[in-house]
Image 1 (cartoon, rainbow, N blue to C red):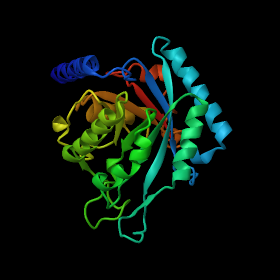
Image 2 (cartoon, rainbow, N blue to C red):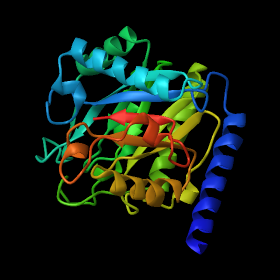
Image 3 (tube, rainbow, N blue to C red):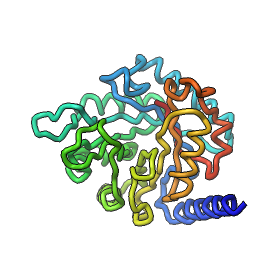
Length: 288
């Protein structure tokens, strides 16, 4: 009973935080008046998500089907489609500079922009730094981040300790690095007079994000803490409570894996109706 009271208190604080920050957001903010429903991946890989696994027209048709399901589950919240493209990919090989990451070409990012335009959606550029850093990688994307429909995601899983190759251990990102990103995005918003940017932080363990309470909340940036783990529904629900709802920042997200979430002993993919029962209700949904 005492544990239930604590969980209820955390949920109440989370809801209050979302409402309070929403009131201070700049004009044109997508959250919380909309729900973002996106597809994730890289066009050069069939193993990293939907974007590279299916031909573009089929992929967009699938995304539209998911949008319709979400509109049916929550008719009062308009759905904004998203293409989350991994623009910096963690690698098993060091590369020329020993940073264990590969920067995708402009052609890949521009393809993501064209696909998003077809569904009147947004693009989210995902960054896996490897042995590089957000300070080094994110400023290189400014020519795209200055566009009003381009957002950003960071993946602490691939923010590696010095000397550790990606894939050997789960990485971690501290609030000070997330705050660098928040500050950088807020400067772009002010410099180019843009609506607020969305920053997605992917997470599935406690250590992946440290000192969450020190993450800065500013009107120019809307932060989504996204539950990125896969597995049976009970495990995903517990992870959401433990790592997302229990450590609120601003908005919450939930990631679904078409293949991994359906592997035994899983009973299948969460439906929109099931996700709508989570507290707080996620405003960001991503399919891989």
